[in-house]
Image 1: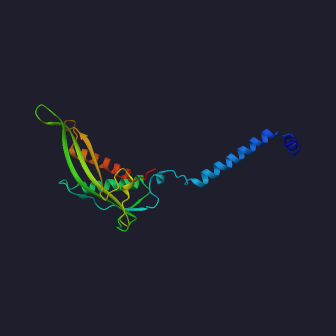
Image 2: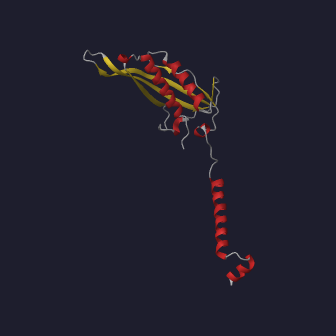
Image 3: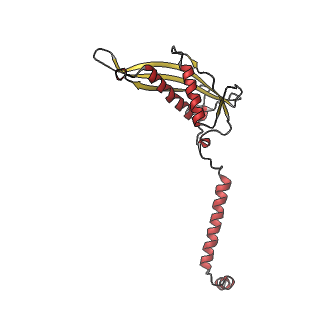
Length: 194
Protein backbone atom coordinates (compact mmCIF):
# COMPACT_ATOMS: atom_id res chain seq x y z
CA UNK A 1 0.00 0.00 0.00
CA UNK A 2 2.80 2.46 0.76
CA UNK A 3 4.55 1.81 -2.57
CA UNK A 4 1.31 2.48 -4.51
CA UNK A 5 0.61 5.57 -2.45
CA UNK A 6 4.21 6.77 -2.95
CA UNK A 7 4.15 6.30 -6.71
CA UNK A 8 0.86 8.25 -6.95
CA UNK A 9 2.22 11.12 -4.78
CA UNK A 10 5.65 11.48 -6.35
CA UNK A 11 4.81 10.74 -9.95
CA UNK A 12 7.47 8.65 -11.66
CA UNK A 13 10.11 8.68 -8.87
CA UNK A 14 10.72 5.36 -7.26
CA UNK A 15 10.46 5.01 -3.48
CA UNK A 16 14.00 3.63 -3.30
CA UNK A 17 15.56 6.68 -5.00
CA UNK A 18 13.69 9.19 -2.88
CA UNK A 19 14.62 7.42 0.32
CA UNK A 20 18.34 7.51 -0.63
CA UNK A 21 18.12 11.21 -1.31
CA UNK A 22 16.36 11.74 2.02
CA UNK A 23 18.98 9.70 3.89
CA UNK A 24 21.78 11.60 2.14
CA UNK A 25 20.24 14.93 3.10
CA UNK A 26 19.90 13.86 6.73
CA UNK A 27 23.51 12.64 6.75
CA UNK A 28 24.72 15.97 5.35
CA UNK A 29 22.72 17.91 7.95
CA UNK A 30 24.13 15.74 10.75
CA UNK A 31 27.69 16.20 9.47
CA UNK A 32 27.32 19.97 9.33
CA UNK A 33 25.86 20.01 12.84
CA UNK A 34 28.71 17.91 14.22
CA UNK A 35 31.46 19.89 12.52
CA UNK A 36 29.97 23.31 13.16
CA UNK A 37 28.70 22.77 16.67
CA UNK A 38 31.16 20.44 18.35
CA UNK A 39 34.57 21.66 17.16
CA UNK A 40 36.41 24.88 17.71
CA UNK A 41 36.87 27.05 14.64
CA UNK A 42 39.81 25.98 12.53
CA UNK A 43 42.76 28.34 12.49
CA UNK A 44 45.64 28.40 10.06
CA UNK A 45 48.93 30.24 9.71
CA UNK A 46 51.34 31.25 12.46
CA UNK A 47 48.55 32.37 14.80
CA UNK A 48 47.23 28.79 15.04
CA UNK A 49 50.49 27.62 16.62
CA UNK A 50 50.50 30.10 19.48
CA UNK A 51 48.26 31.08 22.38
CA UNK A 52 45.52 33.52 21.46
CA UNK A 53 45.26 35.08 24.94
CA UNK A 54 48.79 36.56 24.70
CA UNK A 55 49.48 39.57 22.51
CA UNK A 56 52.62 41.14 24.00
CA UNK A 57 55.80 39.66 25.45
CA UNK A 58 58.36 41.44 27.59
CA UNK A 59 61.87 40.01 27.18
CA UNK A 60 64.34 41.56 29.65
CA UNK A 61 68.08 41.17 29.02
CA UNK A 62 69.10 37.61 29.86
CA UNK A 63 70.96 37.18 33.12
CA UNK A 64 74.35 35.63 32.69
CA UNK A 65 76.01 33.41 35.29
CA UNK A 66 79.05 32.65 33.10
CA UNK A 67 82.33 34.41 32.45
CA UNK A 68 81.44 35.19 28.83
CA UNK A 69 79.55 38.43 29.55
CA UNK A 70 78.32 39.08 26.01
CA UNK A 71 76.10 35.95 25.95
CA UNK A 72 73.15 37.58 27.74
CA UNK A 73 72.60 40.45 25.29
CA UNK A 74 73.33 38.25 22.26
CA UNK A 75 70.83 35.60 23.39
CA UNK A 76 68.19 38.23 24.15
CA UNK A 77 68.63 39.80 20.72
CA UNK A 78 68.34 36.41 18.99
CA UNK A 79 65.19 35.45 20.96
CA UNK A 80 63.51 38.81 20.27
CA UNK A 81 64.32 38.43 16.58
CA UNK A 82 62.79 34.93 16.51
CA UNK A 83 59.65 36.05 18.41
CA UNK A 84 59.07 38.91 15.99
CA UNK A 85 59.77 36.69 12.98
CA UNK A 86 57.83 33.53 13.85
CA UNK A 87 55.06 34.46 16.27
CA UNK A 88 52.07 36.80 16.28
CA UNK A 89 53.33 38.32 19.55
CA UNK A 90 54.68 41.84 19.82
CA UNK A 91 57.85 42.24 21.90
CA UNK A 92 57.62 45.26 24.15
CA UNK A 93 59.83 46.96 26.70
CA UNK A 94 56.88 47.37 29.07
CA UNK A 95 57.14 45.09 32.14
CA UNK A 96 53.31 45.14 32.31
CA UNK A 97 53.00 43.17 29.06
CA UNK A 98 50.67 40.15 28.78
CA UNK A 99 53.64 37.85 29.48
CA UNK A 100 57.32 37.94 30.39
CA UNK A 101 59.99 35.64 29.00
CA UNK A 102 62.89 35.45 31.44
CA UNK A 103 66.18 33.96 30.28
CA UNK A 104 69.23 33.05 32.31
CA UNK A 105 72.48 31.71 30.87
CA UNK A 106 73.51 29.05 33.39
CA UNK A 107 76.22 27.19 31.48
CA UNK A 108 78.83 27.97 28.86
CA UNK A 109 81.82 26.00 27.74
CA UNK A 110 83.57 24.08 25.09
CA UNK A 111 84.43 20.42 25.00
CA UNK A 112 87.11 18.73 22.94
CA UNK A 113 85.85 15.98 20.66
CA UNK A 114 89.03 14.94 18.86
CA UNK A 115 92.69 15.74 19.35
CA UNK A 116 95.76 15.60 17.15
CA UNK A 117 98.74 13.48 18.17
CA UNK A 118 100.26 16.67 19.63
CA UNK A 119 97.23 17.10 21.93
CA UNK A 120 95.95 20.05 19.93
CA UNK A 121 92.16 20.07 19.65
CA UNK A 122 90.84 19.29 16.17
CA UNK A 123 87.08 19.40 16.72
CA UNK A 124 85.27 21.03 19.61
CA UNK A 125 81.70 21.64 20.74
CA UNK A 126 80.59 25.07 21.98
CA UNK A 127 77.93 24.47 24.65
CA UNK A 128 75.44 26.96 26.12
CA UNK A 129 72.78 26.12 28.71
CA UNK A 130 69.83 28.43 29.37
CA UNK A 131 67.08 28.49 31.97
CA UNK A 132 63.78 29.71 30.44
CA UNK A 133 60.74 30.91 32.35
CA UNK A 134 57.69 32.29 30.53
CA UNK A 135 55.05 33.70 32.85
CA UNK A 136 51.78 35.56 32.39
CA UNK A 137 50.85 38.86 33.99
CA UNK A 138 49.70 37.16 37.21
CA UNK A 139 52.92 35.12 37.50
CA UNK A 140 51.47 31.83 36.27
CA UNK A 141 53.79 29.63 34.21
CA UNK A 142 53.03 29.42 30.50
CA UNK A 143 55.62 26.78 29.53
CA UNK A 144 54.17 24.11 31.83
CA UNK A 145 52.07 22.66 28.99
CA UNK A 146 55.19 21.95 26.99
CA UNK A 147 57.65 19.11 27.49
CA UNK A 148 58.74 20.33 30.94
CA UNK A 149 57.18 18.91 34.08
CA UNK A 150 54.60 20.99 35.90
CA UNK A 151 56.83 22.39 38.62
CA UNK A 152 57.84 25.81 39.78
CA UNK A 153 61.26 25.31 38.18
CA UNK A 154 62.15 26.96 34.91
CA UNK A 155 62.73 24.94 31.76
CA UNK A 156 66.38 24.29 30.94
CA UNK A 157 67.61 24.12 27.36
CA UNK A 158 71.13 23.08 26.39
CA UNK A 159 72.49 23.52 22.87
CA UNK A 160 75.86 22.87 21.29
CA UNK A 161 77.53 23.58 17.95
CA UNK A 162 80.59 21.87 16.54
CA UNK A 163 83.56 23.81 15.20
CA UNK A 164 86.95 22.88 13.79
CA UNK A 165 89.74 25.43 14.38
CA UNK A 166 91.95 23.87 11.69
CA UNK A 167 89.24 24.66 9.12
CA UNK A 168 89.23 28.32 10.11
CA UNK A 169 86.20 28.19 12.40
CA UNK A 170 86.31 30.11 15.67
CA UNK A 171 84.65 29.90 19.06
CA UNK A 172 82.80 33.15 18.30
CA UNK A 173 81.10 31.79 15.17
CA UNK A 174 80.26 28.56 16.99
CA UNK A 175 78.79 30.50 19.92
CA UNK A 176 76.66 32.60 17.56
CA UNK A 177 75.37 29.45 15.86
CA UNK A 178 74.60 27.96 19.28
CA UNK A 179 72.77 31.13 20.35
CA UNK A 180 70.70 31.17 17.15
CA UNK A 181 69.77 27.50 17.63
CA UNK A 182 68.86 28.18 21.27
CA UNK A 183 66.63 31.09 20.27
CA UNK A 184 64.88 28.88 17.74
CA UNK A 185 64.28 26.15 20.34
CA UNK A 186 63.05 28.63 22.97
CA UNK A 187 60.49 30.17 20.61
CA UNK A 188 59.40 26.67 19.55
CA UNK A 189 58.61 25.97 23.21
CA UNK A 190 56.24 28.95 23.19
CA UNK A 191 53.94 27.13 20.75
CA UNK A 192 50.67 25.74 22.08
CA UNK A 193 50.12 22.03 22.39
CA UNK A 194 47.72 20.48 19.92
